[in-house]
Image (cartoon, rainbow, N blue to C red; front, top):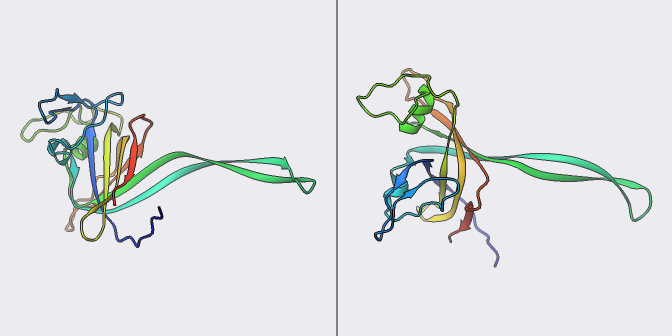
Length: 188
């Protein structure tokens, strides 16, 4: 089957942090999000929609490639250089003008997700990352999901956004980590 299409894409991004307990549909037992656990499905839909990054303005996918050059014998005589490349990191960088509790936790170094009206000590959490399940849905211009990536990942806040007359633009990154449950599917 050949997949040929022009792509005008939009993205929906979701991130469910490790340790989150999700109620599953059909009377199933609750699921605690963990790298060793099967990733949550969307039943009930709040398993992901409660953790959506809204108003995503752009997403840039990148990868880090490690390259090693070997000198090997050439069939015609002599030697030639051959490059071997390996992808060592896969990442998505996104911008939005809407914050959420996860980004506020990272911005302020909070021990837990902030709750409105409840004070926490800033700077307690020293690392600038949260691990969890990342779901990226790519939609076409009609809003139909055409691709779905679901991976164990590390969320990092890159830029918390400036205070000023313009709406703060927040930048964050999501780095794919290793899990046997990582998946990618072309939906349509």
